[in-house]
Length: 545
Image (tube, rainbow, N blue to C red; front, side):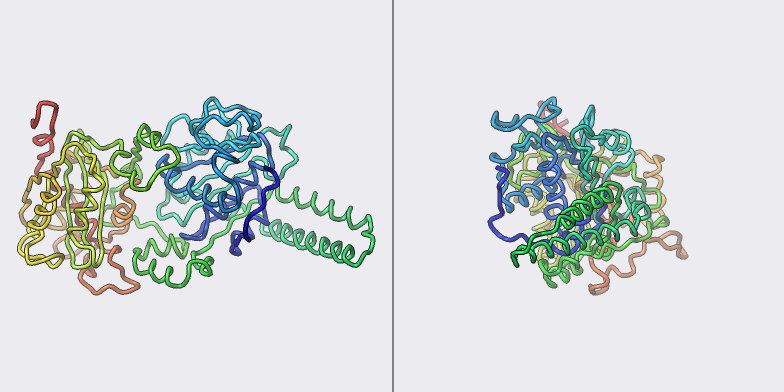
């Protein structure tokens, strides 16, 4: 098994090659989307550690188990397969390894969330939303994926102290205790915890590693040429090569390497059309951070100024996710993976309507909280019918097929999204065609901006009946829109800045950057707070209560 050879040449772009060549003990890569962070930076890192430290234990840290299952692990497995490593042959996941595999130096208590290689090396899948996954571990390396969503305090308290390794066996390796942190550019202060590694990097040391690598290559070239010409290789050259290697190992063992890359670094594979498409489809802020990897300031004076990190939560149904194993179809990621969903209760929805973008925000009141379960939007040629379809497909396994549809006067009298019927009629019709009952709740004229500003910020501060709480995994775009919504003080008080909402879209001013999604959330919150209907239509085994 150790003699595996790739069936074809492997392409790595410049950032990927440089990261591997430098091989610093601590590596932090902040890169845009589709730069190959998982399959061409993380996958070689994990493979190197597991292959060259036989019997070692490493940790793969992900913000949520769902993220690890859908993003991190598939990227690793796909890359390994390209390089000739087959699941079930060279490694197994989530089960006890075959007897032919070597045993780990430290046997895991169970193998449910463990990748085991044939040489006895194991990687523990550590998901921060799953308590106890870092307990009692002794790790020789750690990979942190999607670091901007990682709880740094939990990482610092629970996982990093475990990265002590077994020096008796692996102390000679520069990558013993190795730490790799991967992310695109964070958009919040809390998610920016890893950016300080830039100040920890010794640039002279990194240049020394590069110079030593060049000298090793140059010396090996000299040796190859001498052998090619039939000359005897002097002992001092071999000795020099060993000294260079020892020197390189020492430098790598204490090196911190920090680098920021934009997605444009991978343009040879992505193509210019991908970058153009992302610029069109993403909000400017998301494009700046996720594609161009630019640092941004965090808005502190927005329309929703009282929203805090504590208003976001994770809610994965581990029992369902575990039942999927590590071989599943993406379509299996529906409402069954959400632990926060009350399956016997109706789902409340608020919507926003526009010619080119339409939003639906779904939630359920629970005690003194309004859980914002999930948000959906469709753009351009996909209209309200497609939006309702997306919702119904996701909630196909929800037991109470009732939606409480909150709407105001903006849903009446016009419809430039579908046909000659108004928005309200189309939405009710589309839900009923799919077997859902619709409870219509009319809110009247839209609430004035200054009233809405006070109401919702009081809600975030815990001074209203319901406090909004957002399922982090299911509301990425909505959370971003809320965090960046601007406010200005006009003659009539505080107003949400909607000045560009009706303007034609340009590459610099995209639809998702506007306030449409936040307006859908506003409608949902105002409805649930001021016009509560939820408990009336909840069902028990005895029927409607």
